[in-house]
Length: 112
Image (cartoon, rainbow, N blue to C red; front, side, top):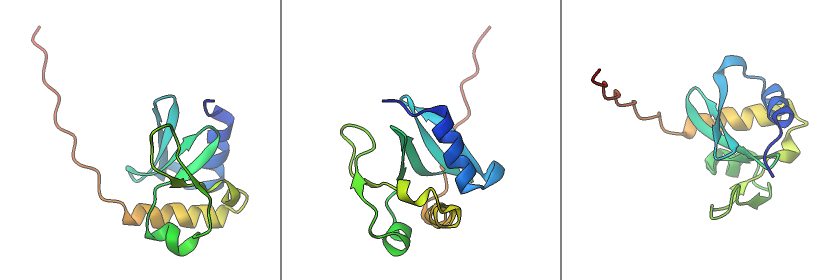
């Protein structure tokens, strides 16, 4: 089951980070980015937070399951969506722990 656009919009509204929070379609689902760092996936209308020390410290009791077939278990933060401060804090703390994205290599120029 693919994620509904309305659910993705709701997640973004609850996290409330404005332009700092972006998303990209990924295999029919979505990756969430804060300041260009992947922090979560939205799959099957659920929010899967990247495993990190932030989750272990702030939300150690979140249920876990794989976001897509063949993936490792990720913490599922659906129960935090009704608490904007809690989900925002978890997302921001996770982003602080994620590595900077690698610089993109310049694309090859096509010959005309």
